[in-house]
Image (tube, rainbow, N blue to C red):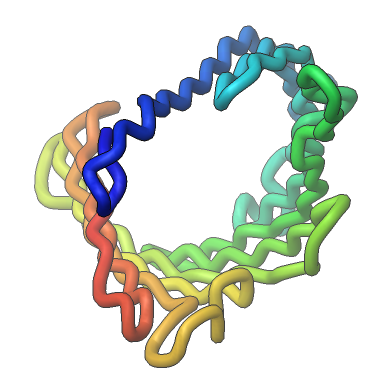
Length: 184
């Protein structure tokens, strides 16, 4: 690589690796799950750590309409570089999903250890298209990215099609003056 004067500046390569192993089990009125993970990152120096993710979800409540859940991410992990230490971004979340016929309503609250609390909500409409085919239309809003740049941010739109347990999803995410991003 060269700078604007044509001088050699060297090369730069950044790598990240995460490997996890998880397990979940239904225990009475809740489902519990967890995963242990190994994380390694290389920028100039390398650092690695291990961490845990934990989650709990209620059985369906209110005539199978309501589900509640809570999760904790990146518990215990600290990346130790040559002279610096960096904690993995810990976050605790709580959420609820409520089903009304073909419509799912969801609401999440996220509480990062370092950073601002944010909330997200969404609506999904599901339609059966025959034996095993299904179509989903979704929209949502998150306060996490709202107002980061001028223009429309924080909102998402999506479509999905499924056959049995296989599905393909597309999302359109406006990024204000930066333009649109497309997710598959």
